[in-house]
Length: 383
Image 1 (spheres, rainbow, N blue to C red):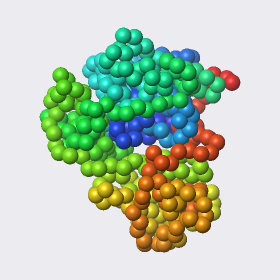
Image 2 (tube, rainbow, N blue to C red):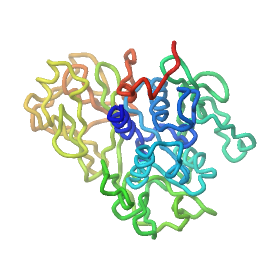
Image 3 (cartoon, one colour):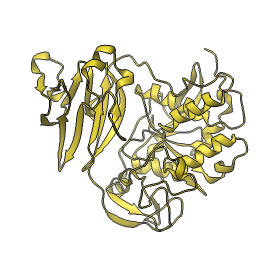
């Protein structure tokens, strides 16, 4: 059972991000870990984050939805967690995957305000509507509650339970266009290496690029490190980034970011780190057609460029058209600048395009991060 729990925590780890381009909602990890009514189990459990992540994916009808987690520093030594869970949280902190703060305060709402993210919490924010008017908007604050099969999200305000993103605040839109550096050595959020500077650096599973760093905190209007409460240095403009998505069989399976100067490979099983692997979602025929590394996506100035590096070639759906006569061939080794709405089709039904232009359009069959969870550890409510 210990091995099964470790596999679940590994799966959950893939869903925690402080990257403004990819995070889809913000939450307080310490709060979520104590949703004991999810399973009637231990006072605190890191596995409950997986239940909330699954609920978010169902509500958004999308796989692999990342969350932005804010964590009180006390959680690193919380005796209600297992020693393995505490080690995992420390590793996430050292990798810059979560924000660990001595006093989270309003950081949850600040992140949501700066990035326009919905908030997942049972807390009430009475009296804060003046500072954060969007708290009154339906879909911006949702409470995770027990439900058949795990958890569901219910609205704090108005009807509906679908998370809704808003526009980034003026300050947030400006902050994410710059790189920031913290003067504290080894800062996991704003260090020179973009993370991995703590005691668990040797256990790092992934390196967070500096371009994916979180938004600074604003202290009296000054960009500051939320963890060290020190003024950040402006390290220059952040390279342009585009958020893309992969849709397979009508369902968005994964979002990813392409940064200028850092191409991303998409294929059945690309070599190296940072590639987008599709094999787990493909049928046998699609696996035979799609190359291990099939497509390279690049940003050049203002252009998003698709470079086919496959054996069999791809196709282009201009402006997203599904009319077969309008499909344009993209032969092997050829490039194409993608216009607005254009989709690259690696195989019929396997498409890559800008995330904002590629919604899910099929019955949702979620891939649960809790698939390996032992029933003794997670006694979910019965239907």
